[in-house]
Length: 293
Image (cartoon, rainbow, N blue to C red; front, side):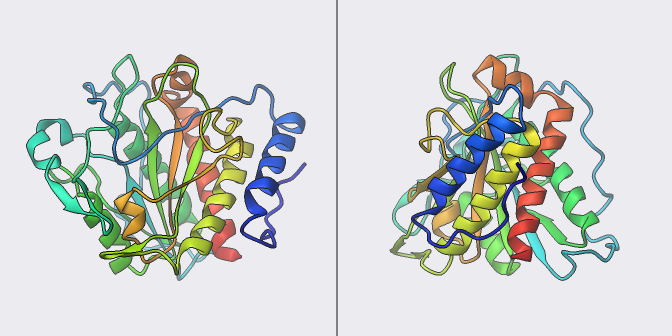
């Protein structure tokens, strides 16, 4: 059954419709559905030294290189690779509190890793490079919030600011979880309706929910991973009000938790370069579907 790109008629109905679509896809088009998810900014696990099991896809030489004309020409997408490979060397700096609009939170965390030492920060950069290349091939202007080109960070408030200042049509923050063994499957985190301090998501809640639903639908079809079995009630969607990267965004934004690095079955997917390419493809297709309406 092909994924239905039509916009659900109401926000309340979206998770139910998506959940049904995902279940049908797993039953009819995917063998061995079982996936990969996460929480987001506040992972406390220390990242071990990175072990790269496969060479990453080669990204374009420069995000400002000449772009082909395509269906996303004129659109700007910001990709936010979660964490920074060097955060573990700057724990004092990343523990500094920053304003997230409704309170204060650590600048960033080190992220998690697989038991074999493949760091989340390396995973997010690899997938982000692949995603950038796929979107640029469709004509999109793509910016990364970081590309292992700074000693730590950026902090979560700056990550939001980068997307805002770029006037991005969509922002996707790429992550992987560090949950318990047996917790499997991906999920997409959506911004809750938040207003307080410097945070006001009232103008992006609906558009971000559409972006997240589109990504979730394409992600399950392309990767073969099922929605999270421990977050989101089987819909692959989770709404949160405690993430500064979402609270402070003024443009449509979601977090994609691609899998649980601490579960050996999910870890086998996350460390597979071919699967990471599928993950990037699923996100690219979802972003494109959202931007094309």
